[in-house]
Image: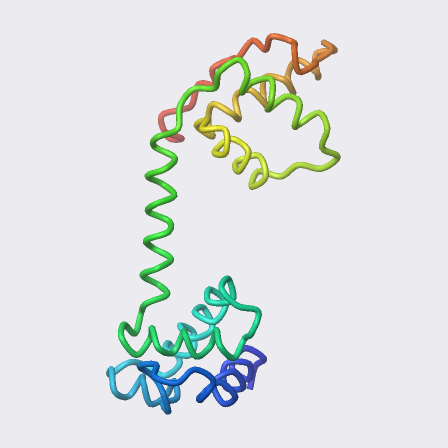
Length: 172
């Protein structure tokens, strides 16, 4: 038995009666799977995803597991659907992002110059928090890096000459 299967079983076992009145009261994941005609292994995976998601609302894994089971009793692939919906919403939000203002450029440069370690996820979060299209934000960062590599001093107030990167037809 792997750790995830053990954890799901443990959470279900100790969470059955913490919250009364839920749709899945008294049911285990296997019973829910049988009622819905679902593969028990798939349902366990959904329960694990669900428990992780519901931990956003509580620090009690038993409660999170029970809430997850309640959702799964209604919609067996609830957490896959939730993930798809969140991804779609994120993509819609990114469509609404625009070109960076001079102040956005300055903030991006200040940020990258003060960070000892950067990753794409952190930078992407910065761009979206500013309302800047991530591709436009990357252009600022890449242009600043190019200037720095060419021996030019880069400060937050340095005007950055953005260089449009041309992509091969295969990359587009």
